[in-house]
Length: 131
Image 1: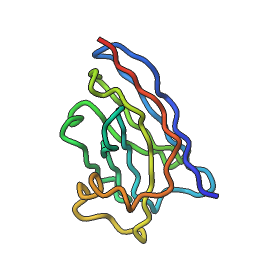
Image 2: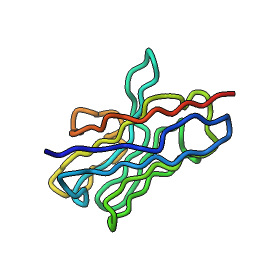
Image 3: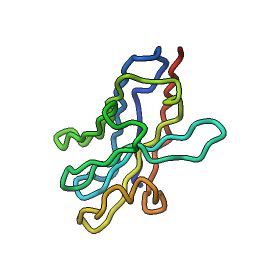
Image 4: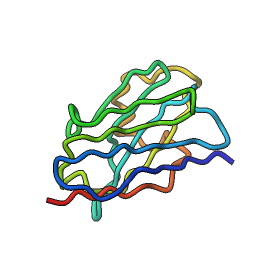
């Protein structure tokens, strides 16, 4: 059964950095659109960053210039490097994948708002940023 396992969350102070990792089990993600999403208490889950099969990327406006999504095909791992963290980045972070036949999503940014195409989802990793 395909699963995703996130790690790397934690508690940091404002301006700090964290790197999240996501490892799929049961499949390799090379032909999948992959993404990071987050959900803060009392808010809807939102798209944070996407990386497509051609390595193109898309980011939510709130994280542009601070977060970087990447993938390492040698160890089948997805990353989210988060720098200059703010209290409003506090949330549960999830990774997810979407299979679109191995073709890039155009426009990629569409995937930030359409979560229905993504499955499976990981269990999440908590990120807390304190001032």
